[in-house]
Image 1 (tube, rainbow over the protein chains, first blue to last red):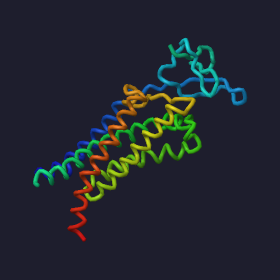
Image 2: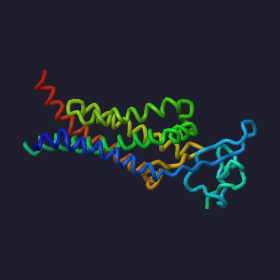
Image 3: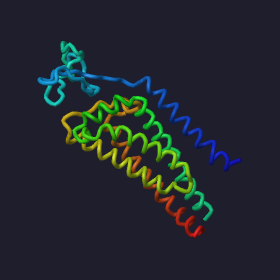
Image 4: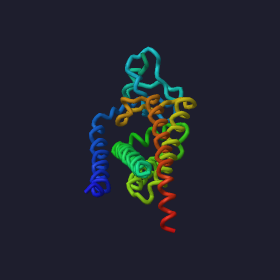
Length: 80
Length: 149
């Protein structure tokens, strides 16, 4: 009984737990995408670090380009 | 003697179960949010050229190692693979934090709560854990090979 538990039940429980946790935390995923104006390619998207928020004091940049909250490039992203 | 033999079996087994949960969780969250994971790799100055292939290789390797850890016979190899994977992740995070212009957001799964610095500490702990697992399992594996050859 102990061998069966260690060989099959515990690994199966571990697998189910990992799958369950992954699906549970998937809904909590925060997707923050910022936009910047590339001189040749036009408006491009980029992943934004968590502390970059609209109207923050220290401007957030990607490869030297200012990041914005929307594709219309109206709200600048910055850190407080 | 009995206690030592029990430790040689139970310590690597518990560590393997923990790594299985961790790797499966990490792989599934990456695959569920594949587009975001790939985008983050593309924006990384170190890996941008290989983003498409790495976005598949990393979660598949994690799944492979996670299931191999559950097989008693291949546990030592899987623990070595876990050590290599976690060391690579730690090196990548250290490089990103110190030498990259752009730090990608830590926004997938538990990473959002942990942050990059917390993630480094967790990885260092995991590297140590894999070394402990290898240490205890290698003694057992020697015994296994001595009795099968």
